[in-house]
Structure formats: structure tokens, C-alpha cells
Length: 241
Image (cartoon, rainbow, N blue to C red; front, side):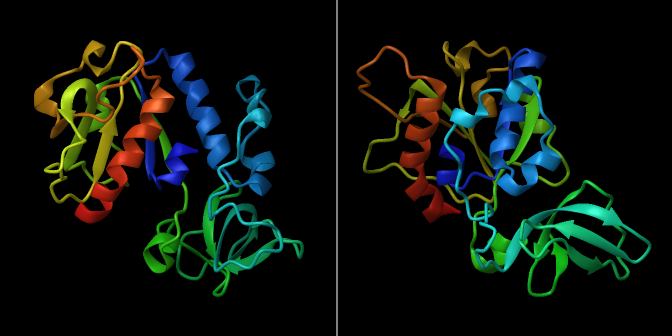
């Protein structure tokens, strides 16, 4: 919910045992997937046993069946030599699209569809063309170093790295601002803080910030820290990006 509210493009799960990282990533991916695609893209799994009690993202790409929308997320249900069919969650059934000169998407592939042109487009198109938030990607990293230096080719390199800690610089000052950036990442630690991470090194961070000075509790849970930090950073992010 915090990621969707603050229009986060990517969530990286790191520093946990593999089984825990995979479980959390699976839940995050399930929540990001539009409801009408979950049966196809999110197979039944014990990790998803309690997802029914989680609040929905209700993001713009979670379009209702009869809601008009220029773009919709879909999954390829059938693919032949020159055409393919896509389930985009509408009552009239699957769309039939032509591939033209482009490579044919495989059955089971999730794609973004331009409903006016009835053709696939880049997932970034709704945001760049209409300013619509179109969900987040989830990835798993073994270490903090992998988070920062081993990104997929589709993700630009981070040019501003913000680490959060109660020992950092207070964000609540009149002089605080963010430098200009193209791709920003905000790092959060576990119960013992980011400092307890084996890859912790102040030289890796552009800024070392305390987003909640004078806190009334000895500890702030990660899910609380995410919402606190992003709410306070959001106006600075908008003005500097």
C-alpha cells in the first residue's frame, strides 16, 4: 500500500533468508497484479494463504471490468503465427492483436495493451503519456551490494542513494532538500537498523537520514518506517526529480 500510494517503481527485498525473501516477494507480486489476472499469473501457493485479509492496492492499473481506460494490463492466452489473444479483463472477452514485424509474445506473458490501438506497448507508456502510476516491479537481492550494483538492465543505475537511520541527519529542518536526480533508491534496515547489515558502508550512500527524529518508541517497524519516510520525502522527491 505504501509503495502504491507513493508511486514507487521498484521494491527490492534483501538480506533475508531465501525462503523468507521469496515469500515476501511472492506476496508483493500478487498484490501488484490486477485481480483479473491473478488466477493465471499467481498460482495457488501456501505463501498466499492469507492474502485475502490484505488491503488492495486499488492502483490505476487495477482497472474494473467495465471501467473505460486507455491502457489495460493483460496476459497472452493464445499465440499463432501473426496474431495473439490477450485477456484484459473485459466482459467481451479476449482481444485479438496482430504482431506485425515485432516478435510474438508467448502464451502466459503479461503485457500492457493500448486499448485504442489494440496493441502492446511498453509498461512505462501509461506513466509517460498520461501520468498514470502503473505498479511496481519486485526483485530479490542477496545483499546490500547486490541491491545497489546488480540491477536488471531495465532499471537505470541509482544516482541518489538514501539510507535511513535514527543516527542520520534530521529531515525536519528548513534547510533540508534533495539534490537533482534521475533514479532514487531509499534503503531501510531491519529491527537492528541498516547499520547491522553486513554490507553497511557510509560511503555507499548519498544521504544518511533520520526521517523521524524525537520518536516516542524505541523502535520503528520497517512497514512504519516506509510510510513515514516516503510521506516526508515525497515533496522533496517531486521538486528534485
